Length: 137
Image 1: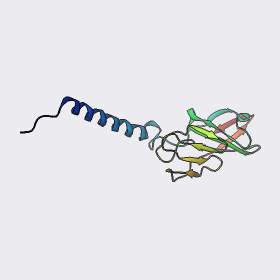
Image 2: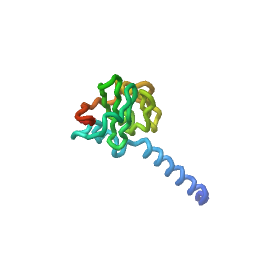
Image 3: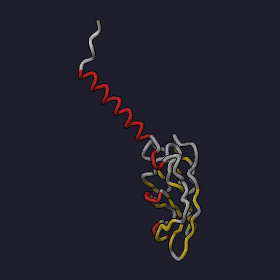
Image 4: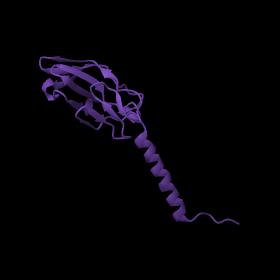
């Protein structure tokens, strides 16, 4: 005759199951996932064009966009939503943006993947400078 599992065994199993669920939640795409558009549907005012350094880039995390200025007066804009699992890039250093979820890295001047697991480039977003301001979308 078998004995029921000890209370400690049951609680440990529940904790592990909960941790596994949290791990899946962290990797899930949620609000910023596949169902949410990577490209804005309306124009977005990003503020001063001077905020984007020549030869560098600026992350607009709240707007899920990253803008680079590879040459003076030339702006490139991409979705800051990682193409692997939909997480928003956490930081931009020089010309590379990094995803905090699984370590993907992107060239923010071209959108191309520099390091996986992402295999698709960032989506390009139209951007223009008007009266010293950047407008994306």
